[in-house]
Image (cartoon, rainbow, N blue to C red; front, side, top):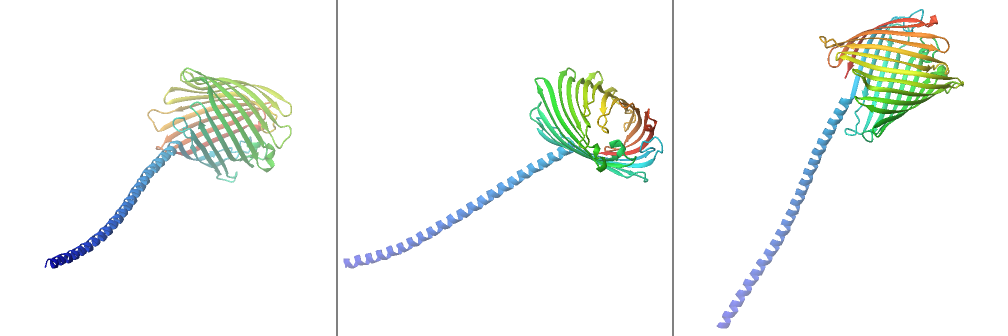
Length: 436
């Protein structure tokens, strides 16, 4: 009986253990599946978090980059707005002697239009060490009758300036001008009214520095002039090198010494051209109380290709005087020896004086009045002597911030010991100008 009970207990135990083992295997499998499922979910969640983080970073970079780009655009616009100046000018003119002839004067109504841009950024060690500058101007001239052909001129210049330090800098520039004018004005020969194409190309460089407290600068310039077809004998090249040293004084004044060396060559002519040396001493800045400008005196020597020589004694003055804030006086004058570009070896002693004034009426704040007179004497070594006179008066009215209208009268005349060279000319102009 006991054995029977023991057997029954063993059988029941085996059945229970077997059931437990089955349940345990199912739990293990279930737990294993749950683990891998949770692990997969965790990995997926991590990937989503990474994607979300990358998306947020990308959006952040885009926002920061966009803000930076917007700031750069704003600075760029401000940079150009502050330094770029645009202008346009329309002039309606009556000229009673358009060719400046002694007899058989030709009068006409002329329409002139000019437009251009100037971009001259401020380049300093603190603001911007390097800057690009340029200027562009176009002129168009139309006649109401068939007295002459319409003309157009184009002037352009571009350059680069760089400041190494506050006192050391260098500038390079390139210019190209396309000019259409009468043959007699440009080459000294040709039929009155005959038009000539004139190309003027220039290259320049300037270095400025200082030795201690004494500034100095050195410059180089090459100018090439080319004329149309049959006038190519007047083609010439001019090369100039100069050096200037300054001595600073109190009150924004400087004494200076300048040396200039130049060479002019005519590639299509023999024994034509010259070279020269000039020395200048002068002062600039606030020269006297309420006087500012420049005064200099010079000595030089010209050596012509045909063996002739000429010594010179030159002077130049450009002064401004402001007795009151609304009244400005300007004076300019000088004397120099100027070789003619027509023969290459003839020259003239040139003396010029100019006086002008500008007045702003205190009760008419939109009105600007101006007047001036100038005289130039040419004493040619051939025996010819000319006196050129110019008088002008002008009144401007500021219509608004950008536009002004002006009326101008100008008289030009030349007196000469060769009567056929004399002329009288009167010009009346109505001008509309916009500055932006």
